[in-house]
Length: 484
Ligand SMILES: Cc1cc2nc3c(=O)[nH]c(=O)nc-3n(C[C@H](O)[C@H](O)[C@H](O)COP(=O)(O)OP(=O)(O)OC[C@H]3O[C@@H](n4cnc5c(N)ncnc54)[C@H](O)[C@@H]3O)c2cc1C
Image 1 (cartoon, rainbow, N blue to C red):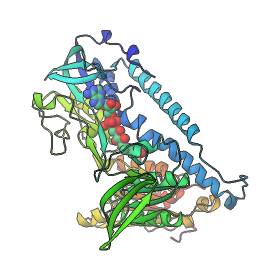
Image 2 (spheres, protein in one colour; image 1 turned 90 degrees about the vertical axis):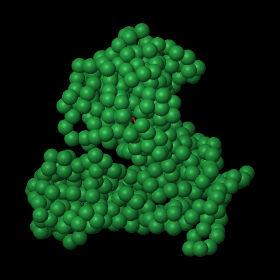
Image 3 (cartoon, protein in one colour; image 1 turned 120 degrees about the horizontal axis):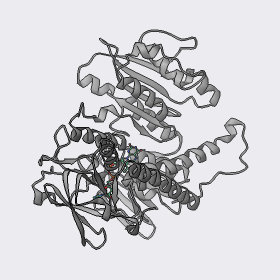
Image 4 (tube, rainbow, N blue to C red; image 1 turned 90 degrees about the horizontal axis):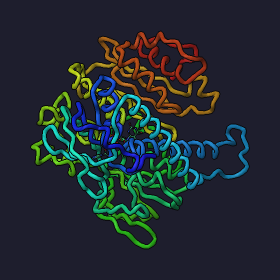
Protein backbone atom coordinates (compact mmCIF):
# COMPACT_ATOMS: atom_id res chain seq x y z
CA UNK A 1 0.00 0.00 0.00
CA UNK A 2 1.24 3.49 -0.77
CA UNK A 3 2.46 5.79 1.95
CA UNK A 4 3.30 9.46 1.88
CA UNK A 5 6.96 8.49 2.23
CA UNK A 6 6.85 6.43 -0.95
CA UNK A 7 5.44 9.35 -2.93
CA UNK A 8 7.87 10.73 -5.41
CA UNK A 9 7.58 14.43 -6.08
CA UNK A 10 11.03 14.95 -7.48
CA UNK A 11 10.58 13.03 -10.73
CA UNK A 12 7.40 14.86 -11.75
CA UNK A 13 9.27 17.82 -13.18
CA UNK A 14 8.15 21.46 -13.20
CA UNK A 15 6.07 21.11 -16.31
CA UNK A 16 3.93 18.28 -17.73
CA UNK A 17 1.37 17.82 -20.50
CA UNK A 18 -1.40 16.66 -18.15
CA UNK A 19 -2.09 16.87 -14.40
CA UNK A 20 -4.94 14.66 -13.16
CA UNK A 21 -6.40 15.66 -9.77
CA UNK A 22 -7.90 12.54 -8.16
CA UNK A 23 -6.73 8.95 -8.49
CA UNK A 24 -10.16 7.27 -8.45
CA UNK A 25 -11.68 5.18 -11.21
CA UNK A 26 -12.06 8.06 -13.66
CA UNK A 27 -8.74 9.77 -12.82
CA UNK A 28 -6.68 6.58 -13.16
CA UNK A 29 -8.32 5.81 -16.52
CA UNK A 30 -7.55 9.33 -17.78
CA UNK A 31 -3.93 9.23 -16.56
CA UNK A 32 -3.30 5.80 -18.08
CA UNK A 33 -4.80 6.67 -21.45
CA UNK A 34 -3.07 10.07 -21.67
CA UNK A 35 0.28 8.38 -20.93
CA UNK A 36 -0.43 5.67 -23.52
CA UNK A 37 -1.10 8.48 -25.98
CA UNK A 38 2.43 9.75 -25.32
CA UNK A 39 1.72 12.62 -22.90
CA UNK A 40 3.77 13.30 -19.75
CA UNK A 41 1.29 12.85 -16.89
CA UNK A 42 1.22 13.59 -13.15
CA UNK A 43 -1.56 11.91 -11.15
CA UNK A 44 -2.37 13.36 -7.72
CA UNK A 45 -4.23 11.43 -5.03
CA UNK A 46 -4.74 12.64 -1.47
CA UNK A 47 -6.17 9.44 0.08
CA UNK A 48 -3.91 7.74 2.60
CA UNK A 49 -4.87 4.28 1.32
CA UNK A 50 -3.57 4.96 -2.18
CA UNK A 51 -5.16 4.95 -5.62
CA UNK A 52 -8.57 3.63 -6.63
CA UNK A 53 -10.90 6.20 -5.08
CA UNK A 54 -14.29 5.44 -3.58
CA UNK A 55 -14.74 2.68 -6.18
CA UNK A 56 -11.89 0.62 -4.69
CA UNK A 57 -11.81 1.64 -1.03
CA UNK A 58 -15.43 2.34 -0.09
CA UNK A 59 -18.10 1.44 -2.62
CA UNK A 60 -17.97 -0.92 -5.60
CA UNK A 61 -15.19 -3.36 -4.69
CA UNK A 62 -15.99 -3.58 -0.94
CA UNK A 63 -19.65 -4.14 -1.85
CA UNK A 64 -18.65 -6.94 -4.24
CA UNK A 65 -16.55 -8.67 -1.55
CA UNK A 66 -19.32 -8.50 1.06
CA UNK A 67 -22.16 -9.37 -1.32
CA UNK A 68 -20.27 -12.41 -2.59
CA UNK A 69 -20.13 -13.75 0.98
CA UNK A 70 -23.82 -12.85 1.38
CA UNK A 71 -24.57 -14.87 -1.76
CA UNK A 72 -22.65 -17.88 -0.44
CA UNK A 73 -24.31 -17.69 2.99
CA UNK A 74 -27.78 -17.37 1.47
CA UNK A 75 -27.08 -20.27 -0.88
CA UNK A 76 -25.70 -22.38 1.97
CA UNK A 77 -28.94 -21.79 3.89
CA UNK A 78 -30.75 -23.39 0.95
CA UNK A 79 -28.21 -26.23 0.75
CA UNK A 80 -30.86 -28.82 1.65
CA UNK A 81 -32.72 -27.99 -1.59
CA UNK A 82 -29.62 -29.18 -3.43
CA UNK A 83 -29.24 -32.32 -1.33
CA UNK A 84 -26.21 -30.86 0.45
CA UNK A 85 -25.78 -31.08 4.21
CA UNK A 86 -23.75 -28.12 5.50
CA UNK A 87 -23.98 -29.33 9.09
CA UNK A 88 -25.58 -26.30 10.74
CA UNK A 89 -26.60 -22.70 10.15
CA UNK A 90 -24.00 -20.90 7.99
CA UNK A 91 -22.76 -17.64 9.49
CA UNK A 92 -20.75 -14.79 8.00
CA UNK A 93 -17.63 -14.13 10.07
CA UNK A 94 -17.27 -10.35 9.82
CA UNK A 95 -13.66 -10.14 11.05
CA UNK A 96 -12.55 -12.55 8.33
CA UNK A 97 -14.60 -10.72 5.74
CA UNK A 98 -12.96 -7.40 6.63
CA UNK A 99 -9.53 -8.98 6.12
CA UNK A 100 -10.70 -10.47 2.81
CA UNK A 101 -11.83 -7.02 1.64
CA UNK A 102 -8.54 -5.46 2.68
CA UNK A 103 -6.61 -8.13 0.78
CA UNK A 104 -8.72 -7.53 -2.36
CA UNK A 105 -8.23 -3.74 -2.08
CA UNK A 106 -4.46 -4.08 -1.62
CA UNK A 107 -4.17 -6.43 -4.58
CA UNK A 108 -6.24 -4.23 -6.92
CA UNK A 109 -4.45 -1.04 -5.77
CA UNK A 110 -1.10 -2.63 -6.52
CA UNK A 111 -2.27 -3.77 -9.99
CA UNK A 112 -3.50 -0.24 -10.79
CA UNK A 113 -0.30 1.38 -9.51
CA UNK A 114 1.88 -1.00 -11.54
CA UNK A 115 -0.09 -0.41 -14.76
CA UNK A 116 0.15 3.35 -14.32
CA UNK A 117 3.86 3.25 -13.52
CA UNK A 118 4.52 0.96 -16.48
CA UNK A 119 2.77 3.48 -18.72
CA UNK A 120 5.06 6.22 -17.30
CA UNK A 121 2.53 8.08 -15.12
CA UNK A 122 4.12 10.02 -12.22
CA UNK A 123 2.02 9.33 -9.12
CA UNK A 124 2.11 11.73 -6.18
CA UNK A 125 0.22 11.27 -2.93
CA UNK A 126 -0.75 14.93 -2.60
CA UNK A 127 -3.80 17.19 -2.66
CA UNK A 128 -4.13 19.06 -5.91
CA UNK A 129 -5.23 22.70 -5.88
CA UNK A 130 -5.78 24.91 -8.93
CA UNK A 131 -3.17 27.63 -8.62
CA UNK A 132 -3.94 29.07 -12.08
CA UNK A 133 -5.41 28.06 -15.47
CA UNK A 134 -2.26 26.09 -16.24
CA UNK A 135 -0.80 25.55 -12.77
CA UNK A 136 -1.56 23.03 -10.05
CA UNK A 137 -0.25 23.29 -6.50
CA UNK A 138 0.60 20.03 -4.75
CA UNK A 139 -0.30 20.27 -1.06
CA UNK A 140 0.41 17.92 1.82
CA UNK A 141 -2.97 16.19 2.35
CA UNK A 142 -2.76 16.46 6.15
CA UNK A 143 -1.09 19.79 6.87
CA UNK A 144 -2.12 21.59 3.66
CA UNK A 145 1.50 22.78 3.29
CA UNK A 146 2.71 23.62 -0.20
CA UNK A 147 5.00 20.94 -1.62
CA UNK A 148 5.52 22.22 -5.15
CA UNK A 149 3.70 23.75 -8.13
CA UNK A 150 3.50 22.09 -11.54
CA UNK A 151 2.70 23.76 -14.86
CA UNK A 152 0.33 21.75 -17.02
CA UNK A 153 -0.90 22.21 -20.58
CA UNK A 154 -4.07 20.34 -19.56
CA UNK A 155 -5.69 19.79 -16.16
CA UNK A 156 -8.21 17.01 -15.54
CA UNK A 157 -10.29 17.24 -12.36
CA UNK A 158 -11.50 13.81 -11.18
CA UNK A 159 -12.25 14.51 -7.52
CA UNK A 160 -15.33 12.26 -7.17
CA UNK A 161 -18.22 12.65 -4.74
CA UNK A 162 -19.07 12.02 -1.11
CA UNK A 163 -22.17 10.72 0.67
CA UNK A 164 -24.60 13.15 2.27
CA UNK A 165 -26.94 11.81 4.93
CA UNK A 166 -30.57 12.92 4.73
CA UNK A 167 -33.17 13.94 7.33
CA UNK A 168 -30.62 15.70 9.53
CA UNK A 169 -28.97 12.36 10.33
CA UNK A 170 -25.32 12.27 11.29
CA UNK A 171 -23.66 9.01 10.25
CA UNK A 172 -21.53 7.76 13.17
CA UNK A 173 -20.66 4.37 11.66
CA UNK A 174 -22.33 2.67 14.64
CA UNK A 175 -26.07 3.45 14.74
CA UNK A 176 -26.43 5.55 11.59
CA UNK A 177 -24.43 4.36 8.62
CA UNK A 178 -23.97 5.34 5.02
CA UNK A 179 -23.70 2.33 2.67
CA UNK A 180 -19.91 2.57 2.49
CA UNK A 181 -19.67 2.05 6.26
CA UNK A 182 -21.68 -1.14 5.99
CA UNK A 183 -18.80 -2.69 4.07
CA UNK A 184 -16.54 -2.62 7.11
CA UNK A 185 -19.18 -3.45 9.73
CA UNK A 186 -17.85 -5.50 12.68
CA UNK A 187 -21.06 -6.75 14.32
CA UNK A 188 -24.27 -7.95 12.69
CA UNK A 189 -27.19 -5.84 13.94
CA UNK A 190 -30.41 -7.60 15.00
CA UNK A 191 -32.48 -5.12 13.00
CA UNK A 192 -31.96 -2.38 10.41
CA UNK A 193 -33.96 0.35 8.73
CA UNK A 194 -32.75 1.23 5.25
CA UNK A 195 -33.70 4.68 4.05
CA UNK A 196 -33.85 4.77 0.26
CA UNK A 197 -34.83 2.56 -2.67
CA UNK A 198 -31.82 2.71 -5.00
CA UNK A 199 -29.13 0.16 -5.90
CA UNK A 200 -27.15 0.79 -2.71
CA UNK A 201 -30.33 0.38 -0.59
CA UNK A 202 -31.22 -2.95 -2.21
CA UNK A 203 -27.66 -4.25 -1.88
CA UNK A 204 -27.50 -3.11 1.76
CA UNK A 205 -30.77 -4.97 2.42
CA UNK A 206 -29.35 -8.12 0.82
CA UNK A 207 -26.18 -8.03 2.92
CA UNK A 208 -27.99 -7.34 6.19
CA UNK A 209 -30.53 -10.05 5.49
CA UNK A 210 -27.68 -12.52 4.89
CA UNK A 211 -26.20 -11.42 8.24
CA UNK A 212 -29.47 -12.46 9.86
CA UNK A 213 -30.82 -8.92 10.54
CA UNK A 214 -34.49 -8.11 10.34
CA UNK A 215 -34.56 -5.50 7.54
CA UNK A 216 -37.10 -2.84 6.58
CA UNK A 217 -36.62 -0.62 3.53
CA UNK A 218 -38.42 2.72 3.89
CA UNK A 219 -38.89 5.03 0.91
CA UNK A 220 -41.09 7.88 -0.19
CA UNK A 221 -41.28 6.30 -3.66
CA UNK A 222 -43.86 3.72 -4.63
CA UNK A 223 -41.36 0.98 -5.46
CA UNK A 224 -37.74 -0.11 -5.61
CA UNK A 225 -35.08 0.94 -8.12
CA UNK A 226 -36.70 3.91 -9.90
CA UNK A 227 -34.22 3.70 -12.80
CA UNK A 228 -34.98 0.11 -13.86
CA UNK A 229 -37.78 -1.41 -15.92
CA UNK A 230 -41.08 -1.78 -14.02
CA UNK A 231 -41.03 -5.59 -14.41
CA UNK A 232 -37.59 -5.82 -12.75
CA UNK A 233 -38.57 -3.52 -9.88
CA UNK A 234 -41.74 -5.53 -9.25
CA UNK A 235 -39.81 -8.82 -9.45
CA UNK A 236 -37.30 -7.65 -6.84
CA UNK A 237 -40.03 -6.44 -4.46
CA UNK A 238 -41.63 -9.90 -4.59
CA UNK A 239 -38.28 -11.65 -4.11
CA UNK A 240 -37.55 -9.43 -1.10
CA UNK A 241 -40.97 -10.34 0.35
CA UNK A 242 -40.18 -14.06 -0.09
CA UNK A 243 -36.91 -13.57 1.79
CA UNK A 244 -38.52 -11.66 4.65
CA UNK A 245 -37.13 -8.23 3.72
CA UNK A 246 -39.90 -5.72 4.51
CA UNK A 247 -40.60 -2.77 2.25
CA UNK A 248 -42.55 0.36 3.22
CA UNK A 249 -43.35 2.38 0.11
CA UNK A 250 -44.91 5.86 -0.10
CA UNK A 251 -43.68 6.49 3.45
CA UNK A 252 -42.67 10.01 4.40
CA UNK A 253 -39.88 10.18 6.92
CA UNK A 254 -40.66 13.10 9.25
CA UNK A 255 -37.72 12.77 11.60
CA UNK A 256 -35.24 10.34 13.08
CA UNK A 257 -34.10 10.01 16.69
CA UNK A 258 -31.14 8.28 18.26
CA UNK A 259 -31.56 6.33 21.49
CA UNK A 260 -29.41 3.95 23.50
CA UNK A 261 -31.14 0.99 21.81
CA UNK A 262 -30.68 2.30 18.30
CA UNK A 263 -32.59 4.50 15.86
CA UNK A 264 -36.24 5.52 15.69
CA UNK A 265 -37.72 6.79 12.42
CA UNK A 266 -40.98 8.73 12.64
CA UNK A 267 -42.88 8.23 9.42
CA UNK A 268 -46.24 8.92 7.80
CA UNK A 269 -47.73 6.11 5.72
CA UNK A 270 -51.17 6.36 4.13
CA UNK A 271 -51.93 9.46 6.23
CA UNK A 272 -51.12 7.64 9.51
CA UNK A 273 -48.20 8.55 11.76
CA UNK A 274 -46.07 5.60 12.80
CA UNK A 275 -42.65 4.96 14.22
CA UNK A 276 -40.12 2.29 13.37
CA UNK A 277 -37.21 1.28 15.59
CA UNK A 278 -34.09 -0.69 14.77
CA UNK A 279 -30.56 -1.23 16.03
CA UNK A 280 -29.10 0.62 13.03
CA UNK A 281 -30.25 2.81 10.15
CA UNK A 282 -28.53 2.90 6.78
CA UNK A 283 -29.04 6.22 5.00
CA UNK A 284 -28.73 5.56 1.26
CA UNK A 285 -30.06 8.74 -0.16
CA UNK A 286 -27.72 11.28 -1.68
CA UNK A 287 -24.21 11.97 -2.89
CA UNK A 288 -22.59 15.33 -3.44
CA UNK A 289 -19.74 16.24 -5.81
CA UNK A 290 -16.46 16.74 -3.92
CA UNK A 291 -15.52 20.10 -5.41
CA UNK A 292 -15.19 22.49 -2.48
CA UNK A 293 -11.44 22.19 -1.93
CA UNK A 294 -10.03 22.69 -5.42
CA UNK A 295 -9.93 26.47 -5.89
CA UNK A 296 -12.62 26.40 -8.60
CA UNK A 297 -14.23 29.72 -7.75
CA UNK A 298 -10.95 31.62 -7.72
CA UNK A 299 -10.29 30.38 -11.24
CA UNK A 300 -13.85 31.17 -12.40
CA UNK A 301 -14.74 27.53 -13.15
CA UNK A 302 -18.51 27.24 -13.24
CA UNK A 303 -20.38 24.84 -10.99
CA UNK A 304 -24.08 23.92 -10.89
CA UNK A 305 -26.51 24.36 -7.96
CA UNK A 306 -25.41 21.01 -6.47
CA UNK A 307 -21.73 22.04 -6.75
CA UNK A 308 -21.05 19.63 -9.63
CA UNK A 309 -18.58 21.00 -12.19
CA UNK A 310 -20.29 22.11 -15.42
CA UNK A 311 -18.77 20.53 -18.54
CA UNK A 312 -19.53 20.58 -22.26
CA UNK A 313 -19.80 17.55 -24.55
CA UNK A 314 -16.01 17.21 -24.52
CA UNK A 315 -15.79 17.28 -20.70
CA UNK A 316 -14.37 20.82 -20.86
CA UNK A 317 -15.09 23.16 -17.97
CA UNK A 318 -15.61 26.87 -18.50
CA UNK A 319 -11.79 27.15 -18.80
CA UNK A 320 -10.54 25.81 -22.13
CA UNK A 321 -7.73 23.47 -20.98
CA UNK A 322 -9.33 22.41 -17.71
CA UNK A 323 -11.49 19.26 -17.93
CA UNK A 324 -13.65 17.46 -15.37
CA UNK A 325 -14.74 13.83 -15.38
CA UNK A 326 -16.51 11.28 -13.20
CA UNK A 327 -18.69 11.95 -10.19
CA UNK A 328 -17.46 15.52 -9.62
CA UNK A 329 -19.58 16.31 -12.70
CA UNK A 330 -22.55 14.09 -11.77
CA UNK A 331 -22.64 12.20 -8.48
CA UNK A 332 -25.10 9.53 -9.70
CA UNK A 333 -22.68 7.85 -12.05
CA UNK A 334 -21.62 4.24 -12.52
CA UNK A 335 -17.94 3.43 -12.19
CA UNK A 336 -17.76 2.17 -15.77
CA UNK A 337 -19.13 5.47 -17.07
CA UNK A 338 -16.59 7.32 -14.91
CA UNK A 339 -13.83 5.12 -16.34
CA UNK A 340 -15.04 5.63 -19.92
CA UNK A 341 -15.06 9.41 -19.37
CA UNK A 342 -11.41 9.13 -18.30
CA UNK A 343 -10.52 7.41 -21.57
CA UNK A 344 -12.70 9.82 -23.52
CA UNK A 345 -11.05 12.95 -22.11
CA UNK A 346 -7.65 11.50 -23.09
CA UNK A 347 -8.96 11.19 -26.67
CA UNK A 348 -10.24 14.79 -26.54
CA UNK A 349 -6.81 16.03 -25.42
CA UNK A 350 -5.23 14.04 -28.23
CA UNK A 351 -7.63 15.74 -30.67
CA UNK A 352 -9.62 12.64 -31.65
CA UNK A 353 -12.68 12.58 -29.42
CA UNK A 354 -15.43 10.61 -31.23
CA UNK A 355 -18.71 10.16 -29.40
CA UNK A 356 -18.85 10.87 -25.68
CA UNK A 357 -20.06 7.77 -23.80
CA UNK A 358 -23.54 8.26 -22.35
CA UNK A 359 -25.17 6.78 -19.25
CA UNK A 360 -27.42 4.53 -21.36
CA UNK A 361 -24.38 2.76 -22.90
CA UNK A 362 -23.56 1.07 -19.59
CA UNK A 363 -25.32 -1.86 -17.95
CA UNK A 364 -26.49 -1.39 -14.35
CA UNK A 365 -26.26 -4.32 -12.00
CA UNK A 366 -27.78 -4.74 -8.57
CA UNK A 367 -26.20 -7.62 -6.63
CA UNK A 368 -29.30 -8.67 -4.76
CA UNK A 369 -30.45 -12.26 -4.28
CA UNK A 370 -31.17 -12.98 -7.09
CA UNK A 371 -29.33 -10.18 -8.88
CA UNK A 372 -30.91 -7.91 -11.50
CA UNK A 373 -29.32 -6.00 -14.37
CA UNK A 374 -30.48 -3.56 -16.99
CA UNK A 375 -29.22 -1.74 -20.05
CA UNK A 376 -30.65 1.03 -22.19
CA UNK A 377 -34.30 1.96 -22.40
CA UNK A 378 -37.06 0.77 -20.09
CA UNK A 379 -40.60 0.14 -21.39
CA UNK A 380 -41.70 3.43 -19.85
CA UNK A 381 -38.90 5.39 -21.55
CA UNK A 382 -39.72 3.79 -24.90
CA UNK A 383 -43.42 4.66 -24.40
CA UNK A 384 -42.58 8.24 -23.46
CA UNK A 385 -40.30 8.59 -26.49
CA UNK A 386 -43.12 7.09 -28.63
CA UNK A 387 -40.80 4.44 -30.08
CA UNK A 388 -42.75 1.38 -31.29
CA UNK A 389 -41.01 -1.66 -29.75
CA UNK A 390 -41.10 -5.44 -29.97
CA UNK A 391 -40.51 -7.31 -26.73
CA UNK A 392 -38.71 -10.66 -26.57
CA UNK A 393 -38.95 -12.47 -23.24
CA UNK A 394 -37.69 -15.70 -21.78
CA UNK A 395 -38.56 -16.92 -18.31
CA UNK A 396 -35.87 -18.95 -16.54
CA UNK A 397 -38.65 -21.42 -15.65
CA UNK A 398 -38.21 -22.79 -19.17
CA UNK A 399 -34.41 -22.69 -19.37
CA UNK A 400 -32.98 -26.20 -18.98
CA UNK A 401 -29.84 -25.01 -17.22
CA UNK A 402 -31.82 -22.91 -14.70
CA UNK A 403 -34.04 -25.94 -13.99
CA UNK A 404 -31.01 -28.21 -13.56
CA UNK A 405 -29.26 -25.77 -11.19
CA UNK A 406 -32.45 -25.19 -9.22
CA UNK A 407 -32.69 -21.43 -9.81
CA UNK A 408 -35.65 -20.71 -12.02
CA UNK A 409 -36.69 -17.37 -10.54
CA UNK A 410 -35.99 -14.74 -13.17
CA UNK A 411 -36.26 -13.73 -16.81
CA UNK A 412 -34.59 -12.01 -19.73
CA UNK A 413 -36.47 -9.26 -21.55
CA UNK A 414 -35.18 -7.55 -24.69
CA UNK A 415 -36.78 -4.38 -26.06
CA UNK A 416 -36.16 -3.85 -29.76
CA UNK A 417 -37.11 -1.11 -32.15
CA UNK A 418 -39.93 -2.48 -34.29
CA UNK A 419 -38.76 -0.84 -37.51
CA UNK A 420 -35.06 -1.81 -37.39
CA UNK A 421 -34.66 -4.63 -34.87
CA UNK A 422 -32.10 -2.52 -32.96
CA UNK A 423 -31.78 -3.65 -29.35
CA UNK A 424 -32.86 -0.63 -27.29
CA UNK A 425 -32.98 -2.19 -23.86
CA UNK A 426 -32.30 -5.38 -21.95
CA UNK A 427 -33.58 -6.31 -18.49
CA UNK A 428 -32.37 -9.41 -16.71
CA UNK A 429 -33.32 -10.93 -13.37
CA UNK A 430 -31.72 -14.11 -12.11
CA UNK A 431 -28.36 -15.76 -11.45
CA UNK A 432 -25.33 -14.26 -13.18
CA UNK A 433 -27.34 -11.27 -14.42
CA UNK A 434 -24.14 -9.16 -14.46
CA UNK A 435 -22.34 -11.56 -16.81
CA UNK A 436 -25.36 -12.03 -19.07
CA UNK A 437 -26.06 -8.33 -19.51
CA UNK A 438 -22.40 -7.86 -20.53
CA UNK A 439 -23.00 -9.96 -23.64
CA UNK A 440 -26.03 -7.86 -24.60
CA UNK A 441 -24.07 -4.65 -23.98
CA UNK A 442 -21.37 -5.80 -26.40
CA UNK A 443 -23.96 -6.72 -29.04
CA UNK A 444 -25.64 -3.35 -28.58
CA UNK A 445 -22.36 -1.42 -28.81
CA UNK A 446 -21.47 -3.12 -32.08
CA UNK A 447 -25.02 -2.58 -33.36
CA UNK A 448 -26.05 -6.20 -33.79
CA UNK A 449 -29.77 -6.40 -34.46
CA UNK A 450 -32.06 -8.71 -32.54
CA UNK A 451 -32.11 -10.97 -35.64
CA UNK A 452 -28.29 -11.32 -35.43
CA UNK A 453 -28.59 -12.03 -31.74
CA UNK A 454 -31.27 -14.69 -32.32
CA UNK A 455 -28.79 -16.58 -34.52
CA UNK A 456 -25.98 -16.54 -31.93
CA UNK A 457 -24.25 -19.69 -30.67
CA UNK A 458 -23.74 -20.08 -26.94
CA UNK A 459 -22.83 -22.91 -24.58
CA UNK A 460 -25.60 -25.41 -24.00
CA UNK A 461 -27.06 -25.86 -21.53
CA UNK A 462 -26.44 -22.44 -20.05
CA UNK A 463 -28.24 -19.34 -18.81
CA UNK A 464 -26.85 -17.55 -21.89
CA UNK A 465 -29.22 -19.67 -23.97
CA UNK A 466 -32.08 -17.79 -22.35
CA UNK A 467 -30.70 -14.52 -23.76
CA UNK A 468 -30.60 -15.94 -27.29
CA UNK A 469 -34.08 -17.41 -26.74
CA UNK A 470 -35.41 -14.00 -25.69
CA UNK A 471 -34.06 -12.65 -29.00
CA UNK A 472 -35.69 -15.56 -30.84
CA UNK A 473 -38.95 -14.73 -29.10
CA UNK A 474 -38.65 -11.12 -30.35
CA UNK A 475 -38.29 -12.29 -33.97
CA UNK A 476 -41.09 -14.87 -33.66
CA UNK A 477 -38.99 -18.06 -33.53
CA UNK A 478 -39.84 -20.65 -30.92
CA UNK A 479 -37.34 -23.08 -29.49
CA UNK A 480 -38.04 -26.69 -28.47
CA UNK A 481 -39.01 -25.97 -24.90
CA UNK A 482 -40.36 -22.45 -25.51
CA UNK A 483 -43.19 -21.55 -23.26
CA UNK A 484 -42.59 -18.32 -21.36
C1 LIG B 1 -22.24 1.97 -1.98
C2 LIG B 1 -21.90 2.19 -3.43
C3 LIG B 1 -21.75 1.10 -4.26
C4 LIG B 1 -21.41 1.29 -5.61
N1 LIG B 1 -21.33 0.20 -6.41
C5 LIG B 1 -21.11 0.37 -7.73
C6 LIG B 1 -21.12 -0.75 -8.62
O1 LIG B 1 -21.36 -1.87 -8.21
N2 LIG B 1 -20.87 -0.54 -9.93
C7 LIG B 1 -20.62 0.71 -10.42
O2 LIG B 1 -20.41 0.83 -11.63
N3 LIG B 1 -20.58 1.79 -9.61
C8 LIG B 1 -20.84 1.66 -8.29
N4 LIG B 1 -20.83 2.76 -7.46
C9 LIG B 1 -20.43 4.07 -8.04
C10 LIG B 1 -18.89 4.22 -8.05
O3 LIG B 1 -18.37 4.12 -6.75
C11 LIG B 1 -18.53 5.59 -8.64
O4 LIG B 1 -19.16 5.74 -9.88
C12 LIG B 1 -17.02 5.79 -8.87
O5 LIG B 1 -16.32 5.59 -7.69
C13 LIG B 1 -16.77 7.21 -9.39
O6 LIG B 1 -15.39 7.38 -9.67
P1 LIG B 1 -14.71 8.81 -9.64
O7 LIG B 1 -13.35 8.62 -10.22
O8 LIG B 1 -15.58 9.83 -10.23
O9 LIG B 1 -14.60 9.21 -8.08
P2 LIG B 1 -13.89 8.52 -6.85
O10 LIG B 1 -13.79 7.06 -7.02
O11 LIG B 1 -14.57 9.03 -5.64
O12 LIG B 1 -12.40 9.08 -6.88
C14 LIG B 1 -12.10 10.41 -6.59
C15 LIG B 1 -10.71 10.45 -5.96
O13 LIG B 1 -10.21 11.77 -6.00
C16 LIG B 1 -9.49 12.01 -4.82
N5 LIG B 1 -9.43 13.46 -4.63
C17 LIG B 1 -10.48 14.31 -4.44
N6 LIG B 1 -10.03 15.58 -4.40
C18 LIG B 1 -8.68 15.54 -4.57
C19 LIG B 1 -7.67 16.52 -4.60
N7 LIG B 1 -7.95 17.83 -4.47
N8 LIG B 1 -6.40 16.12 -4.78
C20 LIG B 1 -6.07 14.81 -4.91
N9 LIG B 1 -7.01 13.83 -4.86
C21 LIG B 1 -8.29 14.19 -4.70
C22 LIG B 1 -10.29 11.27 -3.75
O14 LIG B 1 -9.49 11.00 -2.62
C23 LIG B 1 -10.70 10.02 -4.50
O15 LIG B 1 -9.75 8.98 -4.32
C24 LIG B 1 -21.20 2.61 -6.12
C25 LIG B 1 -21.35 3.72 -5.29
C26 LIG B 1 -21.73 3.51 -3.95
C27 LIG B 1 -21.94 4.72 -3.07
